[in-house]
Length: 218
Image (cartoon, rainbow, N blue to C red; front, top):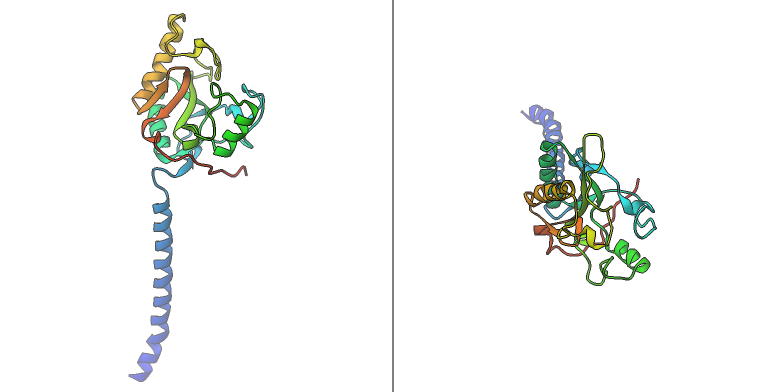
């Protein structure tokens, strides 16, 4: 009997160690899942490959004439990403893809932009922050199957009256293109702003806190 007990003790110890390790891994996995919630910042590229990117502020090709991002990535809160993917699916059914100019903007970047252009008509004052700083805004357009942008009447970041949704002196084609983009985004719970045809705010992101979360440029 004693000999039998001696023979099974090592096995029991091994089983306990393996069991404990397994439980520890499970707990870590559960903790990781818990951390990914609706307000977590995630990279859009990790959730969909259906977007076209032209991250203007990671270049000097913008109204600031300055590169303010170290690299061009589209980070947003997860709930915004899910809504944007819904909009993307709608645009694809129409024969187009969504092209992205800007997404979440860390507060430090907002401060950098404000230092270059300290005018609230063009750049949101970082003391208040913008929806971009909350991870709930995107600047976008539509492109066709050849990657050509649909005609919207003005370039991105054109700050004249012609960029307004309410501007009437436009061709019928441009009006229809703007309305198509607006419909696609509205159906995914995004709001437009009157002065910029390219800017859309995710409705439930309006009350999120301003953030300074940054991403690595590896």
